Image 1: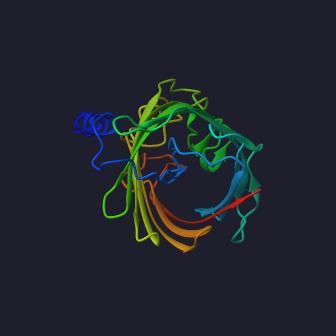
Image 2: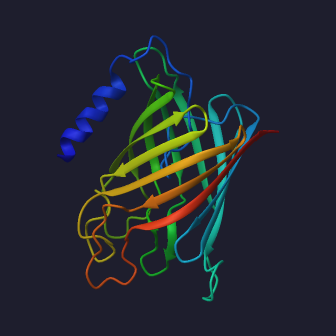
Length: 254
C-alpha cells in the first residue's frame, strides 16, 4: 500500500495540472514538513507551536530574495505545568532555495536544510522525538479546486542519524476553503526511524493532520494532531505516540 501511495503522489506532482493555470497558492509548510513554497522577498513569518509536555517552539522565517528563504527556531518543554523547564540544546536553522518555479505541467521544486525537529530533545539519543528534515528536496503542485489545493512530496536526510542512516520520504496536501478554513495532512514513511535502539516506534510511518482558521489575512490559528498512526514501541518511555497541539502563524512585510 505504501508504494502505491508514493507512486500516486509522484504521478500527480509530475502530471498535468487539473486547472487551466496554477492557482498561485504556495504555503511554506504542510503541518510540520516543508513545501516548495517561499516567503516573498521582504516578507517574514512568525510561527508559535504549543505541543505535548508543555512544549513551546518559536520559528521566524524571512524571504531574503524571490528564491531564497532563511529561518531560525528555538524552544523546549515544560513551559506549561509543574515540571522542570527543559530547553533545546541550541537554536536551529533552516534555509530553502527554489530551483524551479511551478508552471502548467511541472511542480515547483525547492532544496533546503532544516535542523529543527519536533518534540522533546533527547540528549542520550542525540535527536528530537520527531527527527528534523535535515537536507531535503521537495516538489509542490497547486490547483484551483473549489479553492486552493496543493500536493507536496519530497525526500530528506536527517543528521539525527546515530543508529539509522537512511533517508526518508514524505508527502502531504494543503486545502483552503473560502480563504478561512485550512486543512493539511502529511505522512512521513519513517524509513529513517525504524532501526536500532534509538528507534521510537514499532512500525513505519508518521501521520500528522491539522485544521486551521484564518483569523485575518495575516494571522491564522490551527489545531494539530500528530503521530496519529504511530504504534508505540514497547518498553520505551519516550516513544512517539499521538498527541495534540495548537499553532499560531503570522505573516507581514519588513
